[in-house]
Structure formats: structure tokens, C-alpha cells
Image (tube, rainbow, N blue to C red; front, side, top):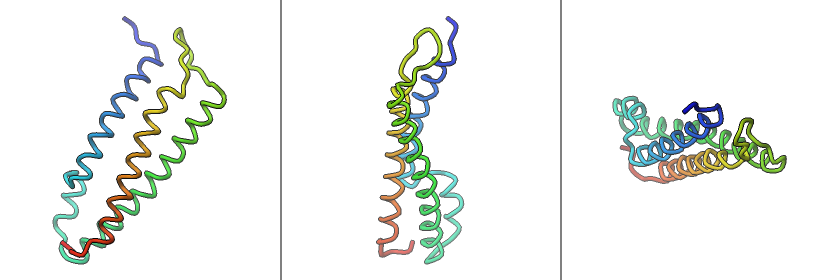
Length: 123
């Protein structure tokens, strides 16, 4: 079986969505290795400040991506854009998962930012 470009796109979108949900789970549990390795060396109010700063930057970038993924989805839906190839599926159908995953990740980052800002402990 020979995969077309659209087949690979559908496979990659599915894999990306699954990895995105796994990343959200690890992100909420505080087990993301890069963040943990960087922030475990710092204590006190500096650690809280850096966590808020990192979450703010992540919130800005994830909000930017979520906004433009949703905008891309709406434009594809309005124009009824179709994929090239034998199957000619509507492009907005696989874009739903990317837009939904990005919006959920943005919500997760903002939620963690609010929790971190209003938490009383510094550690």
C-alpha cells in the first residue's frame, strides 16, 4: 500500500493529538523533564517568579497558536477546502483535532498560571 501525502497528514495529526494530550497530563502533574531540571535547582521566591514567567511565556505562545489554528479551521470550513488526491476529504475535518488540542493546551497553561499566581507557598 502506498500512502499519499494526505494519508501521512492524517496519520501525523492523529499522532500529534495523542502526544499533545499526553504532554498535557505530564504538564499538569509537574513531571515535564526540561522544566523540572531547570527549576529544581532554584528555591524560594525566585522559583515562584521563574515558574510564573515560564507559564506566562508558554501562555502567550500557546494562545497565539490556538488562535491561529482556530482561525485556519474557520477559513477552511468557509471555503470548503478539499485535500488533493483520490480521497478529497474536507481539510477542516483533520484540522479539528489540531485546533481542539491547541485550545485545550492553552486552557491548561492558563489554569496552571492562575494556580501558581494565587498559591501561597513559594516552594
